[in-house]
Image 1 (cartoon, helix red, strand yellow):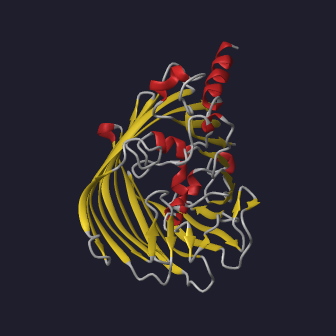
Image 2 (cartoon, rainbow, N blue to C red):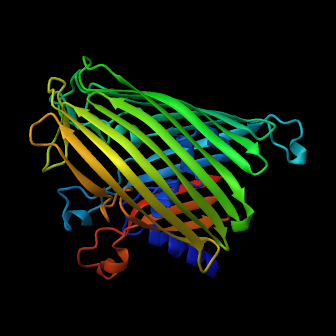
Image 3 (spheres, rainbow, N blue to C red):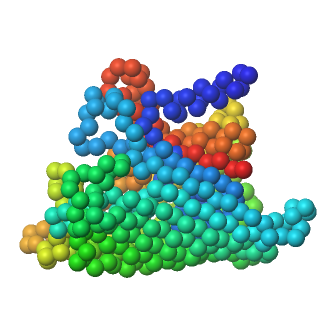
Length: 421
């Protein structure tokens, strides 16, 4: 009974005073900001073959809390629902004739998710195009189909459809007048495999294409291509794995092309009641913008296809990141911490005279995004079935005394949950 009270108290700590989201993204965000060097649920969106690792699995997110430029301490004390909530699941069926002996392979898997926002693709899309707002997508659907073969090899396919035609909607409410020029289309398809290469080595490879368009229908869509790979090589000497990775993407949208080549090496280690990972990667990116204008006051980006001004930014540098989690006090309670540091040299060339320059860049320290320096989180694991993870606000240790008075805005910025059955 006492243990149950402790669980309820900890769960209350996650929910009380928050405007949050969900589980695996929360785990990654609070434990190093990226999942390149260890296996996690969200890897199904990078490699659909990994859906076979999580059979009969439900996943969901309440959304993300983010302070807007006009928010004040007073306005943040009202009840504001989070943005970008979503949910989904994976279901598997064994085709094996020897199920009774515990051999479930071959096995097929079917999955889907609703309302998830593909941040990698949507990051290319401006706020307005040719004087019209670019709306939020209304469909936002992920579909998965996968199979695990008798030898343990895994195959997977994934489609993503996010569209809106004719109306600018926010939380189901139409803002302004509908117009045939208010549109957004994001379509994506990819294939992946997760294959046993040797007794102690598993390899991953995925490749896909995407089409992105927005604004008036006279603006033609652009095609994107991407390929990603990594390998997990068991190292018994450290009770962990060595993980090389690479990622090449040529992402295109009207007025924008972002090409990136990332490669790196990391390790992950199983600890007593915990887990640790560390990795480093090189960054070789090119960002080309044509007809894009950024409002320096609001940060909004607009696209005008008749504006011939262009900017080319070359990014060369490196990124070091780490994460650690450990069960504390009780087996069902997990604490997490992690961080990343980017140092890159950026060379900006503009067609506008006097606006070409170069500088050394580092990621922000604490702006509340997944790109900032550090993360801190908590997790609850109930009987290895229900898992609830939260990214804690980074100012929480300093402002907890202001819970009922003062400028404390929120305790949790993201909450995630999964359930296995």
